[in-house]
Image 1 (cartoon, rainbow, N blue to C red):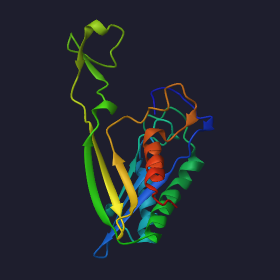
Image 2 (image 1 turned 135 degrees about the horizontal axis):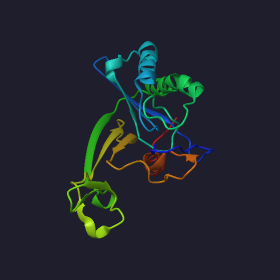
Image 3 (image 1 turned 180 degrees about the vertical axis):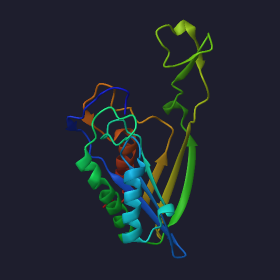
Image 4 (image 1 turned 180 degrees about the horizontal axis):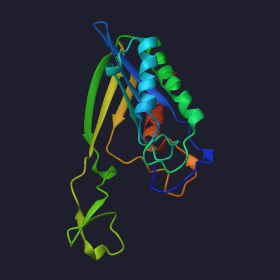
Amino acid sequence: GFFHVRVGERVRDELYAKAFVFEHDGKRLGWVGLDLICVDADFVQQAKAIVAKECGIAPEQLLISATHTHSGPEVRTFGAKVERNLEWLAALPAKIATAVRQACERFQPCTLHHGMMQVPDYVYNRLYRLRDGSEVHGKGNDPDKVLGPAGDRDAELHTLALRDKNRRLIGLTVNLGCHSCVIAGSKTNFFSKDWPGFIGENAARFFRIPTP
């Protein structure tokens, strides 16, 4: 996830593929979130093919995204800094499909609820503009040369909640424009889901959301 060689030597947190599947008027729509730095067309296309066969969700109706954790296995075909684990990558599409299949097996009537709030204390623009007009990540070595952030910040936190017929919360997803390298720094040597994973874990515990 960074721009230098960094090898995971231990597992700090388990990494997951988490899925939502919605069905309305006989049509299905799926969304999978992966605890990875990014997605790659190769394993995404393979996963979509399996899901289409097993779950009846057309490839164009399935979104596969990543939390952008900087402490997951290398999956990039371009710009990779360490050798990819091809055996693990070969098994990844089936794992993604399993998450979708499990979501399909837990179908129940529900309603969707969108929420939004401002959380300015949790985000900032890490790109700064200097007095000479150039821009740098961070304030550099001479704070006196810094004019301020190079642009605005996105402080909107969005949620999508699923509630069953009794109004019980059965699913929740959170979106916030904050880089997923909070827990894992540039010198860490472990695998971690970083803050997106911990928001999910703590939200499930706090709201008593059932998990597989």
